[in-house]
Length: 412
Image (cartoon, rainbow, N blue to C red; front, side, top):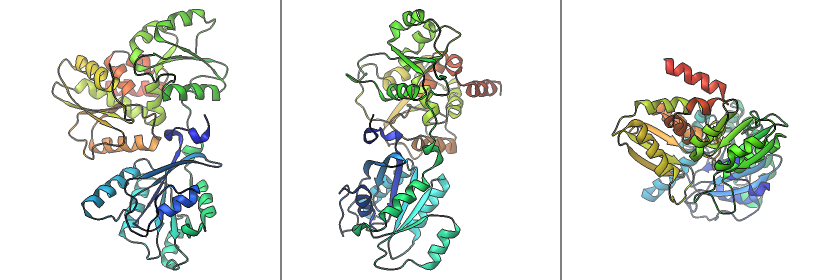
């Protein structure tokens, strides 16, 4: 896959924030060398966040997000500001653009949000041809070790310095990203991936977690074998030594668990993404709440991507059915898609989230933090399915720390 075709979830998300008319859109256009965002003297031209994927060497694929002014006003302005604040959840690297009229409570709010979330931050003093920034402000940034870049975006001045600052400020967990399967499949060994082909499988393609897993196995100098669920047992019989791990789509969990010999590790794509995109231990802890569910309790099913559900949809049909059977009574299910997520999650007794393969890790962790603060358990599709189908410990065997934590929590 070419870098310019990398999925959003594998891109460093760089958010551009500031008040209206400080030059956010001009800065994005200068960075990308394209007219990505509309530039106007009229404040509030940018309404919804504007995204631009590009390659920023040596970092690789990044995603710039131009946001509406944080100081927008009126009923419509409040909606724009709400959309802007949603971008905090997925920002890996924050850029605050400041105009010559200086630092205000709006910039302070953005900086406080970044610092509270541990987001690396760069301050861009734009339009410095019109006025010099205040010395006390510069001294404050220097004392706080916040990088400062001076630009005149409409003239392209300072853009090279900003690019260099972005590269230096990139978070370590992006530069040295964790492996999806590499630590589970030693070099020279085999991963056997079970990929059902049904109505929801995109014609002529595999879904993103499967593609990501295949690429990660190859990147780690291991082998990969792909079969459909009904061919798994025959494939295992043909091998002269067992695979290091069998990874299946969650909808075939029970069959694959039955066909995989006890000595071979087995889990699902959704569970490996629970670890890769989120926090597997937190998802395991959340799954224990399934035992506390009672008929009438509210469960929120959250999907990162927006798709038209068909047939036996995993989030709208299968998970509700399996949880209802496990509880032994009717539960009340709600669904959200994409970046929509309730500000108040306290009405729910459990949140079950998809693998978030289309997202960056920060957005998933942001949701998990919100749930933790509200005291609402959150788990993941694959984790919840394994728990409700009675194959939880088997699915966690590849992750000893998670399995150990589960046993400790069960005793408590």
